[in-house]
Image (cartoon, rainbow, N blue to C red):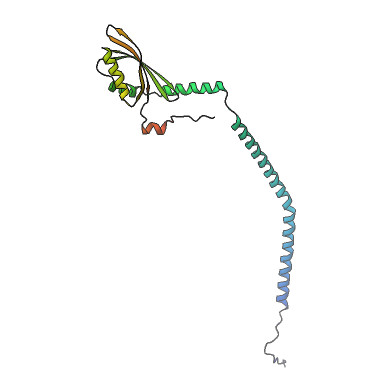
Length: 197
């Protein structure tokens, strides 16, 4: 016959479960120790390489900053500045709009005035014109000067010399031409180049 257990909570054999939990904890502890040891072994090598790379980058950054400071201090030679000014004037002369100038002059010249020659000179975005003109009479030449002065595109108009000829009065007119700037050309062509001071 089997003994009767009168306890309200019978005793169960939990030794296998406790043994399983202890073994799992021990294996977890062993794995943690192995992982920690491996991490310690690898860490100095990785940080040394990273520190070397960081030092190399810092040296390169210092070199670039030194070069930048040296470039900021360098000024071009006077001869180079003169060459740049000549090249800029040549580019300005090439970009000169002859069609627009002829249209403005055609609207400005009175009846009885003929142009013999036009000589432009472009310096730092200022267009100076020297016009050789022949008019029927001195009054017509003065009227030419007045009509050019009345236009907003022409400034500082003066008669440099006047001589009487068979066909009338020949004169050289000096003036400054300020071509109107269209919206398209203002966006595509810069009118001034920044200069270092």
